[in-house]
Length: 101
Image (cartoon, rainbow, N blue to C red):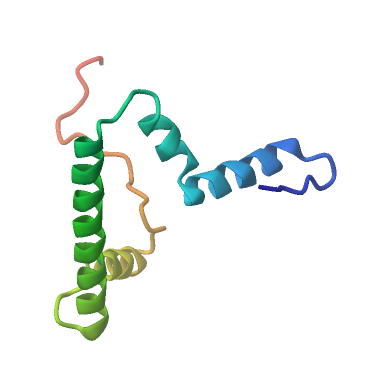
């Protein structure tokens, strides 16, 4: 894996490297290899991962076809209507007056 460092900006290069490693699954594999995994446990994990991937793929396909609503799109549209950034939550204001006065 190779990352280019531009203008001696090591922080940005580290972020890029971490993102690449995350996409490749290096961190997940390192975590799994910390302890021994029995072959039967490995088979069960791989089976459940395959089922999870298949369900996710089916859900994404159904959302694309319009069979089920895309909850992420709804959140983005609601945030746009409110004039906020997606994922931004304003601080909660309490309805009772402060007691420190």
